[in-house]
Image 1 (cartoon, rainbow, N blue to C red):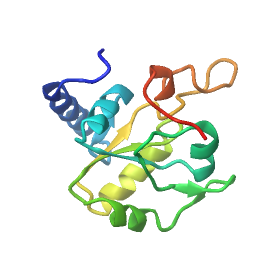
Image 2 (tube, rainbow, N blue to C red):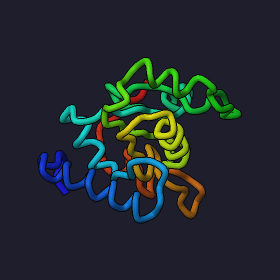
Image 3 (cartoon, one colour):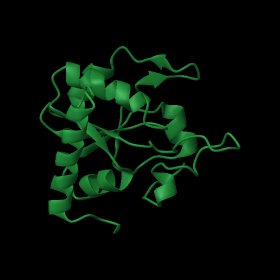
Image 4 (cartoon, one colour):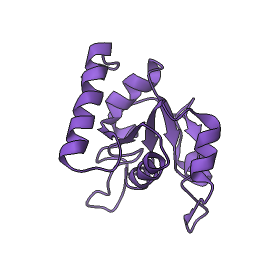
Length: 155
């Protein structure tokens, strides 16, 4: 797969994600691969919302230009009761939104909450930023934004 997908491929990727979401009864628009998410985001076809905690973004890494709205905060990952309102202040309900967390699980919960709040085009980024745990109980090698070599920064 190339670094940046061509526009027709992006459209096809979103269509495929929507169709798969309908087939699987997913409660949001669908799930996209990290490389598809990068193509959409880098070509200004979508807004990327990083739902990880501020601490995760600072110490693990972040994506330049992403909108940071934590789904949960602190070391105990306490649910952010203002999440939907904070997103509403930063984007339109019709924007294509790509949600990212560590592994794709919290962002799926956040995608559902935004969809239930009336957002029309909310997609989860599969594998998240770090991917799943490997046999050594470590992240960063089994999928995820970073393991695919996509752009990110770290403080």
